[in-house]
Image (cartoon, rainbow, N blue to C red):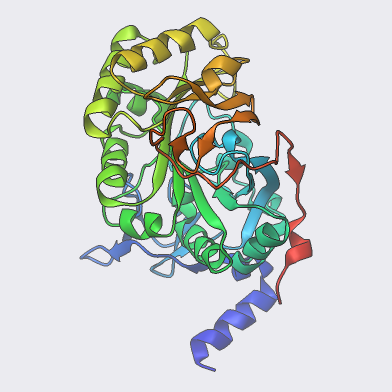
Length: 378
């Protein structure tokens, strides 16, 4: 055993938290050696010794970038895949969802703020190796594992290794993300993902800078890259906030861009906002606004446009883009009628874009918490 390994073991025995600290990727040392530069997300944090990044979970320790939450997780729960939301990826199947702490955005409306803005890493009481997560998903009959609640980009090393462990057991990997990642890190991160839901929070840089403390352009680059350079199945979510990103002009520009750059068959979810975190001064999104957005999207040629977070069975169901007949009936997250044969419409034979099994899953709308420690591997 080398000296570095002996020191790491000794440190772990003295400080249990150090067992969750691993070498980070995607960084470089400044020319003058005064700090390190994070190359993982476009925020490009410059960290002196001891500093943490905006995300809080990446830290300069003795001149090296470290991820401080590897193997420490929260919120393990089996959900319907439609909850991510993914409507064209293995419909009706179950997904094992979990997250960690921290985020590289600063959304005022964050609906998972207790996790994404956590500075109390101790609250992440569940210890979970990539292998134990994959084993739990397999034994519990899940078709996939979702990295969610907080953005997996900030814990990329953990997400990547977990996705690899899942792949060995035939389990798919899903990223629920804002897509705020650098050109350098993007290929490796998505190389192990089978599906993603990318949160396109608005279509103005002003909104991104004021409300999320980030920028729009890197997200658009991620979406274009996913379409042109990867085999990842992806869908887009736009959380519609009254008075903030719900203008007809913005919907038009966003939908025109999606149709032109990504194609008409990328599913788009318009979901309703509810007051939370630092945006308690707004009302919940009216269903009528979501329907207006949907009509605009359809007018630009988008084929699969959904409403979310509202009771709207008609517009949460999937229709064949060719014959317009119902092919997947949804009541919230529960699948009813299912008229696909593989990827093909049973009515007219047209191919419906997505990743579909031989038949629908039967998980339903259940939500089942999981104690991951029961699946811990030695």
